[in-house]
Image 1 (cartoon, one colour):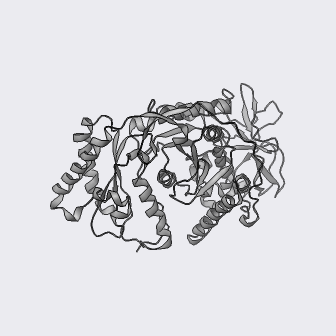
Image 2 (tube, rainbow, N blue to C red):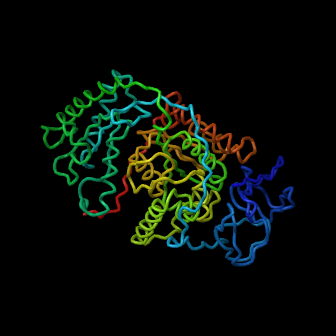
Image 3 (tube, one colour):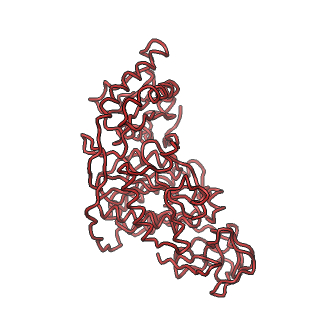
Length: 511
């Protein structure tokens, strides 16, 4: 991607690719009618920040190009200097999956990045944590109220005595009973809960609280040798004993977790999840490309990098299948797109359901433009593996982990895939956070960082202003990831304790 910034003191616009025939307004308050750029372009109307201006005259059905790709066709004539609004852009057909090229891109291997380490918590199974947390899993929603009550008491009465343990996290959810437990798609929520229960940040000391009559048996959530770490509320005499039993079992685990210490680990022990939420037109030109640059650095250092969000990949899939390391991985990527196409079809949903109203206010006209900006997070290295929802990777490198685009569902599924560090880009802003892993938020605009200076961890908007290069921000993010994974710095979401609920993806029927 070649980023061309037409810059004077004022005004500013960004043209991403030399073939683009629209550009994005940079100025935080937008620009008024009559504004003239050094190129000679004159605005025919006011255009807000992040929205597109036509760089030439369009006839009806002319192709509208951004990122060097067609994002739609003109629904009616558009004159040069006009605000290119959503209503002016006809959504193109999605790429035909059966005609996509596989394994066609020739890669020049990037040199290994050596000498970088982080301080993590080594586990006996070889995994590494970035946090030291007591996790308490649940087999059914019925127990959530009792467990939440017990966790509050554990945090206030026990946790201060175990200073090396950072938190106690209840893995509550809306699954477990009233569900078609043997339906084919039930494998997704069950696998997710199994993999969440054994997350590396729990140090292998997880507990499970069950009810006793649920469809999802607690024994299915943890390895057989850990079956002694289960308590069922229906086996207890009253509420007080339920809480006392949970607290007693928790203290046994806290004693062990308190002995965990950080040790120097190679970056190959990091599993970094990438996600965007509250996206805008700058996502694909500042924050996401900077994350993509950092992703390349992480892969060169041996780390595992996950990128996701099917509906925000589907319309740019033709740019990803050539990057798969072999035809098998390429076909797996296509299969995940096909599965989700059918899933949306069953729900009578179409592609116009994405972007969200907030995305559109930030300048994104349709899902094609959003997808082209979203995949910039994936950098340039080969895709070495494709995971179905909630699966754990078997390889190191860049991996596509199929998830819905929903922030909460995507984050939950990436945690199930072993993510121990989360990078979240945002243009519109969100206080999103996860208790199980650090969430490092990167803003697409400097004005958002100024507005939310105690929520945003890194400002990538400087790229649009010409104050920093993409590479400089990418390296800054790379070092910040290491510092946060090592416990040397805290993300703002962890500082404030802003943690969203886990949210399972359950495409199987309820009963």
